[in-house]
Length: 142
Image (cartoon, rainbow, N blue to C red; front, top):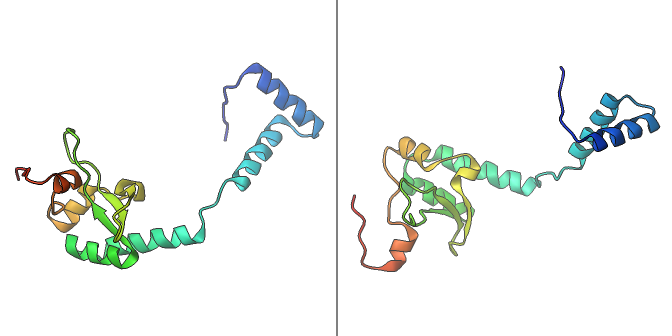
């Protein structure tokens, strides 16, 4: 497989000199440089992998919104809908800690969208957005 790279001439010259000094071709030198960076890349800790796996399983096993929330609460999480802040469309759901309800990440970062779950459960996410819940009397049209 061939690869074309665009790089400043100074960088290319430095890479060529370093490759010659290491008695390697430029291609070999670049492969080694890339591999060394990949090996040093931060690994996802096993605990995070386990949590993501448990969240994915909770989503997969659920057939209703309340069922999903119950499974998530057992794991120490809950889904919340952020306020729309004047945007059109539905903002992504947010995974929060339970019972503190501290926002962690948008659900989409876990590879699942609000729309995916709306289709799966054949209903919209229940409840009002967080800012409206706290705001009091405002009602949102259905």
